[in-house]
Length: 128
Image 1 (tube, rainbow, N blue to C red):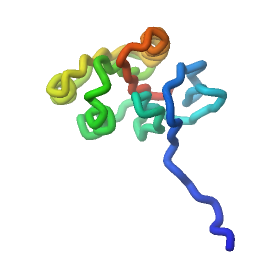
Image 2: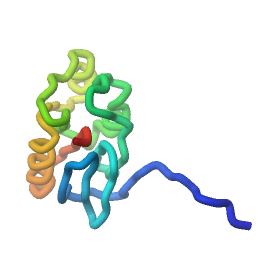
Image 3: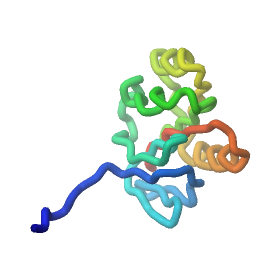
């Protein structure tokens, strides 16, 4: 018997460059995603983060869980740069992750370059 529509958490099981961003989402790997993204070594995940939401360590738990494979975290904070709060920077630093906040557009471009160089990079990208 059919179960109906099954909603799953957004996840792409691999690393891929971001092809486009804007209009509230991103395009990558011949797919599109509406909303924010976490681009991690284990894959690309939908991220429940909106412009203006607090940047707290608990919102970055998935990043912290994969810290052993991440050297640099690029944080795309929207249209404009937002500094990372001290508690978030401390949580990342405690796991030996260097963090770099920037606009989402700059984070996408930097992520793509670092990914092409096979660097241990991750990105937290707030949709614009």
